[in-house]
Image 1 (cartoon, each protein chain N blue to C red):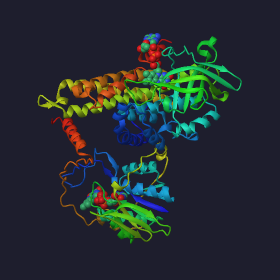
Image 2: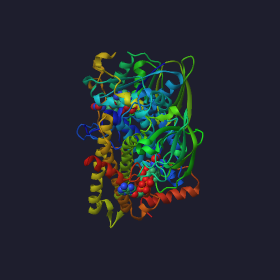
Image 3: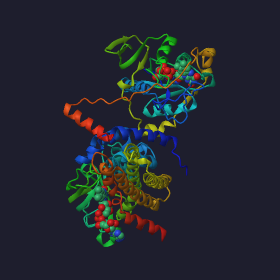
Length: 379
Length: 260
Ligand SMILES: Cc1cc2nc3c(=O)[nH]c(=O)nc-3n(C[C@H](O)[C@H](O)[C@H](O)COP(=O)(O)OP(=O)(O)OC[C@H]3O[C@@H](n4cnc5c(N)ncnc54)[C@H](O)[C@@H]3O)c2cc1C
Ligand SMILES: Cc1cc2nc3c(=O)[nH]c(=O)nc-3n(C[C@H](O)[C@H](O)[C@H](O)COP(=O)(O)OP(=O)(O)OC[C@H]3O[C@@H](n4cnc5c(N)ncnc54)[C@H](O)[C@@H]3O)c2cc1C
């Protein structure tokens, strides 16, 4: 593995950094404050091909790498974690399962619209009674000849209120346990499908997290994704990939909090000197910087394996676990270094601390990551 | 239409360091970027490409590392990129630089030549106008807008200190452009993915229509007498807001600096 960025990645970093700085950062505080989905940013990202980075050209994508995609999530999250997760859920949780499991017809029908950003994607697995224990799916899909009829409710679905395409898990055969779960591609306009209440959240407040409600929802037969009864596998594999995205979201939040803290502690003076000059500040920041760099290596190595087609499930879990816990630690300490100012909304670090928390929860809590890692260790 | 844009790689800093002995710029350790006015010029060319359809060629004279800004130009949407790189170009002042660029341009098909008004390192604003002289072409400097007429003429807006002039130029010409008038587009992801698969043509002096004695140090009548960093004042920020908002902004700024 080459640890440096390739020339193409360098060029991409130059672009995504200036995009994040000029187009995303100025909106971040307002998006958080008003819990507003930054649609104008999504449209700008669409124009540049950012909504389809790792999707091959033949399906309307930019033909980039997973590595480039996770760099985008990191750089966006560095200034606005809401924007980072919009891209991550869209790419990892909606386009990736279609790309990896879809028929040629499904790919041709959905990917060009998603990759161009004309459509936004989402993923519905979690239910009120099926969180960590995702196998306890209660949403039912009944075979009705040329279609499936879906009934049930999903909760906490990222992008839901603005999404056009949803990957939805439902039970097609309750007697078979996880082997009775199947995956479906559901479109916004399908009869019997509606979006329920929007959650009021601690962080990533601009990403619309909502319920999905299926009341005799009619899904055409050809929208079954992958083989019947393989939905649970598809969901788990999708989350493996998604975790690299969330790990880079966490990494971006941590890096953003580092940036703010370095700047602030150099400016703020107490006892006649900049607080950056106190050894306590320096030693703690040195430790945090080391953790952020370690997280970046884990994230890049997991993405590298995915690009190479190597197994990456445990790598993704380790990257997410470590990056999420690093983000929580860095942001908490960033607020501490900012003192009272850090606790106010005048400075972005309190938002970053609220945003960081979700990375320890969604796409598998940190406990779940430990289960995955241990599962590989003791198999 | 064929458009040629001259772009230069410059150090990304307003705080330029100067070698006290050689009186030349110290470039090591300073990240390099496409000169801002040139990026504005490139944006004008790409807007014309979008509007009228055009082939856009970028040319830079510089060391092999200048390849980077040509890749960036590819990712923004240009069709062809040429790097003039040869030891014979070394030590060129503005006259020798403009002569070499003109010598390259003479070998190409073009309808319009665009340069930046000024490079942020050399800062002379001479290369564009000198190039026009070498090529015997009309020129408009400080350009903030340009359109092409059906008959091939250009309607060009030029910024003066206190006014804007609108000119019509007959046929081929050189425009030097202000960055402030053209918000440059971002590179696209697909453009970036393809940028290093495209060919940057590297031309030596032998490819140009030039007298080699007029190139590089030999062709440079200018001798640097003294170089020194200009004392920069902070650029300041302008807010066009109501009085109340102004008070809020001032208070916020003072608080940020912990002055109150
Ligand atoms: C903002 C947000 C966005 C989300 N986006 C999506 C989305 O787009 N799509 C989607 O499908 N879901 C989404 N989710 C759901 C998310 O993935 C779940 O919330 C998460 O998996 C945890 O499930 P739960 O909330 O039911 O917690 P629970 O499963 O009830 O867990 C509660 C606690 O118990 C612990 N725990 C549970 N089981 C064990 C065990 N066996 N051993 C040890 N500890 C255990 C957990 O780690 C956790 O700390 C989102 C959630 C949020 C908050
Ligand atoms: C007195 C003097 C001595 C110098 N001596 C040396 C030296 O010894 N060694 C050395 O390396 N440099 C030297 N330089 C710098 C060299 O002259 C400049 O690189 C070059 O002449 C451009 O001048 P400028 O930066 O003032 O550009 P300007 O005239 O301000 O640039 C105007 C526009 O011309 C175009 N342009 C300018 N340069 C290039 C280029 N290279 N390729 C493509 N387009 C271009 C761009 O569109 C630019 O926006 C010297 C400069 C001066 C003024």
